[in-house]
Structures are given as C-alpha cells and as structure tokens.
Image (cartoon, rainbow, N blue to C red):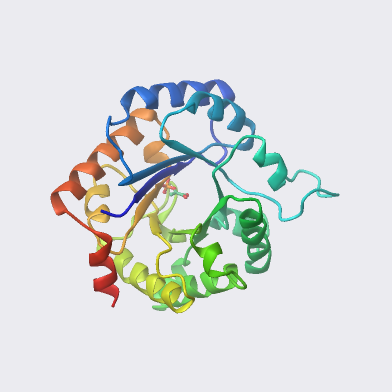
Length: 268
Ligand code: PEP
C-alpha cells in the first residue's frame, strides 16, 4: 500500500503548554503499527515549534510550519526564514493556505518563491490550493486549482517533485462555515490535479483533501483512490480527535485494501 498522509494544521491556536499536552496525549493514543503505510504530521504555530519538536521525540509524527519567507534573512519584519525553521528540525512547510492568500496578500508568484526556498532547505512543501464558492458555482473548480498548482510549481525539477505534497482545500469547505466536499466532488478535483501533476512530470505527488474533515466523512474520503491523505483542522485540534480520525482511516483503508497502483490505473 502507498503512504497515506494524515495531518493537522492548528492555525493561530495553542500555546506552548497546550502543545506539550497535545503531543504527550497523542503519543499515548497512536496505533502501535503505522509502518510506511501512514505518515502523520502536526503543524503548530511558530511559537510552539520547539516545544512540539521536543515533545514528539522519536514518535512517528512529522513536524510542520504554517508559513515561511522565501529570503534567507533581511528586512522583512514579522517574517520567519527557512534557516530559522531548520533549527527546529521542521520536516514540512505549509504554503499557500487560502487564509494566507486572502488575509496576508500571498500570490501565486510569492508562493512559487516559497516552494523553491523550502526545497532548497530540504523541507517538504505542502502546497495548499483551493477554489472559491464562485469558481465552484461556475464549474471552474478544477481549472482554478490546477492553475494554482502550475504557478506554485513553476520551474521545479523532477527531484524537487519527489518531496512535494499538495492539499486540495476548497475555500467553501474549510472552517466554521465550511461545508465538506462530498467524496465524489473531491474525487473529481483530485483526478484533475493528478492529471495536471502527471503532465508536469510529477505523477507521484500525493494530493491530500482538507476542508471540514470529521469522524463522519473521513472514512468515505479516505476510501477514494484519488485521495492520498487528509489535512484536518478543527476535528484534530484535540489529541483524542486526531487519534480517532487516524484509527477510522486506518480501519477504512484496511477494509478497502487500496493501493497506489489502483490510483494510477484510475487516472490512466
Ligand atoms: C483548514 O483550514 O485547512 C482546514 C482543513 O480546516 P477545517 O478542517 O477546520 O475545515
């Protein structure tokens, strides 16, 4: 079975003390056998990275950061650079979340610079792409996110792609007012993303789904062959919630017996 990714981004939530408690709790709840079939990650705020790294220890949980500047250093007040993240042994960097695009002026061009900087420093970029409600209503969801992927990944080499991840996060599906995508609708966009990545020479880049994932829909989403992982917000902000989701997904995928070969077959 190919690796299935399950991770959580915490947005602007959790103090250092809360992070320590969360990770300690999560460690007691992790399944004993993850093997290479599953990759887990948590993405705390910058201020809790050191505590998270220390608390994770040797547990099979990757650590991510929520953003990163593309420059090595300089006059960018309030920003965090790759060398700074290196000190916390960060594994992946989330880039291009729709909240960053909407509230902090991120553009496809700056995201491309960040993706390249992350790769230069040995991180895995987790590129978030998402369609708006208007794009969805116009039937342009796939077109919108494929464009974002092409622009964010412009200029990457084959070797670069082996370390990239994509998260499809419909803007209309995330957060308090979000309505989760049905597995069928998510599947349609994932298939388009896989096809575009294949065209770019990156057929193996995993595409995760994010947006109101919860205990009710995780099983169906994780059983879709074109979905390579789940990126979860609110439902995984308690260790218990995250662990329950992991257990649900593992049980569902075991039942379905899915393999990457089937994904490749499904998308031709
Ligand atoms: C997100 O905003 O990236 C997200 C996945 O949030 P939620 O699961 O809470 O909708």
